[in-house]
Image (cartoon, rainbow, N blue to C red; front, side, top):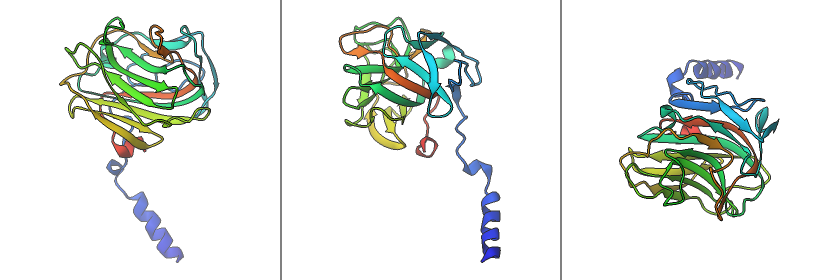
Length: 235
């Protein structure tokens, strides 16, 4: 029995590395929030802290945002933050207080944000007061955003959940994952994602409307990719 176990272990050690998902392939930016807003990705797109702090997170420290419009991390606009074909956003979050309606988690604007059809959005990830996760985006040339909502209760308030939002103009789909599960896939009616060099915000939208507010939450391990993550990579 011992020799068999050793043989099986040897086989597992000899599996090609290519069989393992490479979660760093296509990585644009990575914010671990280990006491700072440094970008550990390949482009060094460091963020700037505004009225927020650091607290125990999902892994080490995390970003404590206060649910206020001036509480966020902002990253200056850069062309690499606006992929044209595909984008995936991965984040751990613990929502401490449910938002009034929509709570802005990740918001990458292409142009100056406006409420006119929300046509500014390259991609944005929201959490609603009923536990719905929403990914929204504006196709290039479109006059308004499109969005994809999970079912209610995908986010349990008061505990860490892992969320992934994907926008693919290649496959014309938008996908939402919650805690490793693909909870919804929707059509994306565009050949390209809206591009532009407006900043990225983590923790709050660019302005507060009657149904859009900042989040009272702990945010951790934010990763942004210029490709679609596979189910195995999300796992």
